Length: 246
Image (cartoon, rainbow, N blue to C red; front, side, top):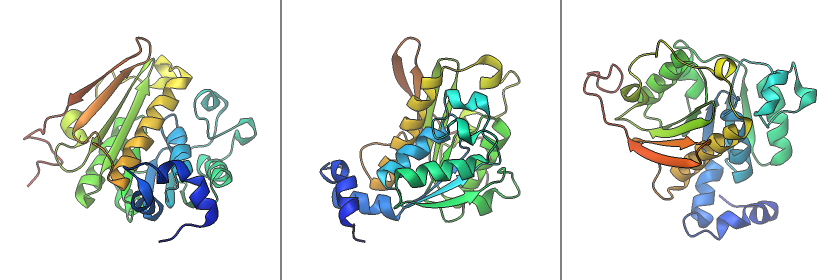
């Protein structure tokens, strides 16, 4: 796989990195990343993945842009209000990097269509905000052997983890919490979405390029209000209904 003169200049800062270089950037260009949700996590993650030169981005979201989204979902602007997120997002990504192929899936991921929506992807980023969808994404990734980058945020804190095989996301969250908080209910500081989305994109790029130590089986917890971060290890659950099933 070769690069055009435009791509060589565009990705120059990657090409001189010893952990990426030409071979790593070629892997990035050949990769397909599926983004489940173009919200607080998915919108900034998509921008950084496009800027990095990921060859194909599959945008999966059935929502439209709302005014309240613009506080943190920086792939959109005021003129996009009322438009499908995958359409508006694709235009922003294409303007940022015309070398990236975009696959639009304006539908909600469910247990019935999850396998079809992630088919052919190399990495999945889940930035959705409901546990039913997260569980569906996790089960599909485990079944198809795909690494899952999970990002979540609320109020002033966020988290990013990477799951591939065991442990899986369901080992960490066995059931939907009865008092689960949503951004619409408890609020979220807008810039936090950029932090978590960028970290999710970084983990996906590390996985694709084979660089460094991805957060495999680990969860990075970021406290924006205190300005601190810590990493905890996720243990496999021997009774997990997904990855421990016979």
